[in-house]
Image: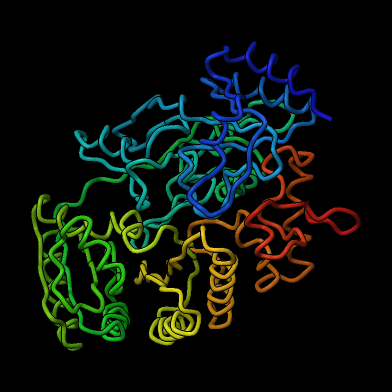
Length: 480
């Protein structure tokens, strides 16, 4: 049993009174992340260094209090929710860019640094950081590492793991270790790769060595507007089938268009059933050739119009609707449950049609936002949590969508992670032997279930129960 007063006293001795939050009214701010899950922590600590994190881990271990590492709280699978209470370590004071090596195109940063701020900081050197989640104006590098975040440009440039060279971490025994290196290749086991996407269950990241890319010579952004969603889906298959891999290939359906237009006035025409946002970059000649070919392919499917942008201001306007659409959904309903699954691109038309059927049958609107180029779906089930039973129904619809993704040869997550919300669906993809093999990683890191317990692996609770709180599966054969 944790002695709350004693633990809080120890935490204050480590980081100072100002940086320990423990009053109930103040803790509510940390009850949520970007998902529908909730869990009230015992205390929130805001460390300023790896040494602070190490001391907090030691104190938590002594008091047998679980730890949840947290960045900006923009995650969408419940990964930063303290479902079993304990301590939240909020890394938002650790925001420093410690080094920029222009010649070798790397940066060393702390985990609380906001994603977009890195690209802004190195822009003058002609460099940028490629992973760009939709929340990049607020999400943190540490959170991106924990969830292996992607974004619109991951189609061409890969997700976070493709841009992380090494990291400093605090392990469950409080020790501070470096994994990986400043180069792309290092000898031995790839423990860096193991940590990226582990959702804070194995270690706490305190520094990250990141690969930077050179800004492309030319960029062109195209917006293709279609009357029907099926035509936009077919255009996606046509573009990829032609051997073109754009930097980004995004799609929004009519509900997303309605919300975005009302919010940011993106100028989408009335009656549009879907829009494709396509971006190509590289050498000027190649960009011109690819953009012309993409327009030719889109015209085969009867677009209402095609717009192009070549300067930064025009591109920003075309991207405004896409980047702001999730926040804009609040104009259509008080709540949304955002599902994250990935399917083969050839199944887009079929899967989107079946999702529409689910919407009609259930009476719940479903807005579809897609990283269409790599088949990463983000259907958002719109609902009102104030109506009894609506949250449970929304989660059930989300579960059916995940089952559909796996059924057609896809996977449970493209970039948001498993967290609380998808753990009960893990057996759709993995056998008992698979999950036992994965679960052995935690004992290998000797976490003692200290870090982010009750996440990723099935708990035995139903989907609806998980939304309220997760209870770890215990006893023989336990996952965690």
